[in-house]
Image 1 (cartoon, rainbow, N blue to C red):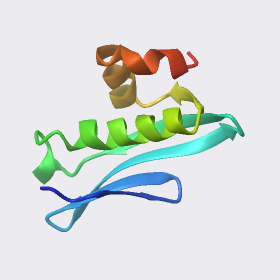
Image 2: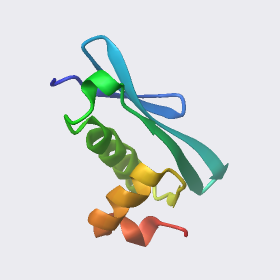
Image 3: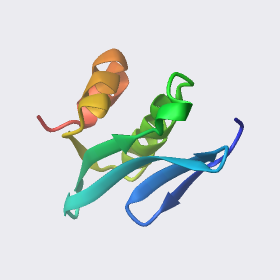
Length: 91
């Protein structure tokens, strides 16, 4: 389960056992991204993969100095539990 997370297009992808877990986003404007979809295959749930890809996506947005719109419920919950990201959020 030590697979790397790849940032490809508007997705963060982690492949485990041949299956993709993803976090998808789109640009709202040049300085803002909307994280709108997180998916982990049923067979892989409970391993913390969603947390890993969400953290990777949010860390990328912070590094790029982007504002975040968390429209995905998993991303919203993650930010509520990890308040360091709250300063970057537009609600």
